[in-house]
Length: 235
Image (cartoon, rainbow, N blue to C red; front, side, top):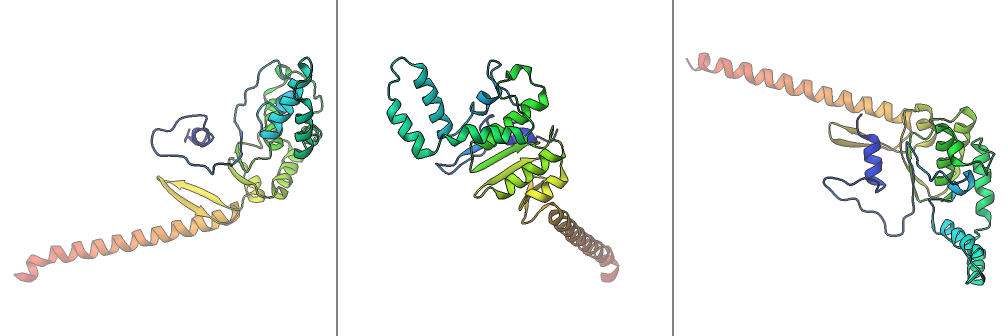
């Protein structure tokens, strides 16, 4: 109810913002795992993994469309580009990620999946796109311990990845995050460290603030007492 999902939707371009401006680097690749992902019901699990993607995923779609077109126009150029981009590895990688997330029937229709299974397919979808910025909304929901530990290790070893997420999983935060942003009373407080570091430094900040408030209150009481004594002193 605090607007966490709305904030992610705005950053990902799914919702408009009332004020302010969101600016990204021109060539940045963004992947977004939504809290309630939606896919066309006619897709299979494997097809859903390539439904939202980067330029390589789009290249694979062009290849499949070319094969379905009479005469296969432009096939040689597409094949050459797929070789350059190493696009042939994508299906294998998608199946590996799905298997780690315990989704093994790659031809199962999306409409037959439970909500938890669909969320895992969506997670595989965003991971396969290899984004520069990965936005995750409650990524460990519907994951068991084995899947969560695999995801932690996957994110830790993925080079050049920036991660922005909303989660209530404190252990996941502790294992994965290297910087935490706290929004408190419309103020943003950055912490360079994991969740344990954040808790310690946040308490230090609160203690410092309370000390400053106490000092200010003491000064106020001293000044007030002095002001009350002024007429008597002058008399």
